[in-house]
Image (tube, rainbow, N blue to C red):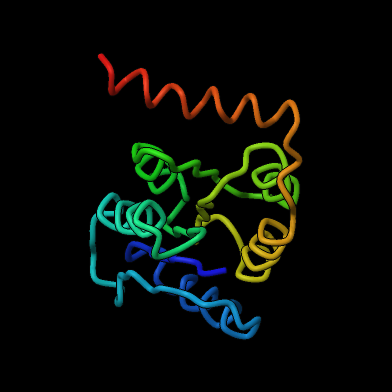
Amino acid sequence: MKIAIASDHAGFGLKGEILKFLESRNIRTIDLGTYSEESVDYPDYAEKVADALTDGRADKGILVCGTGIGMSVSANKKKGIVAALIYSDYTAEMAAKHNRANVITLGARTMQKEDAIRYIDIWMNTPFEGGRHEKRVRKVLDIEKEQKEK
């Protein structure tokens, strides 16, 4: 598995901690920035991670900003991306199990480092349940197709 990761300036510190965690687990990563706490625009980094998934450079993505909300909204604009805002063990599990989220977003200002790492571990290790959830995920992805056809 290869994970693309990016943050804005607010998420820069937590992104570094997440990278250390992933590397300690021998998970390959692509760090797509930002590389400092200098102010940047979160949509630019959400797009970088989304593009890494859609062009095959990465299998999953992690995005970090102040709340995780802006990154989630931005990433979900890209075709094929199912980005979920994670803020608990339960949302981490359900993002994988029921929503087949290929990107998760985290808020550096809304959670502790240890919690964020635990959420990532849960998400990475929870399989998609399929079944009735496959139909629902397919319906979500079909909305993208309908928009493109109009």
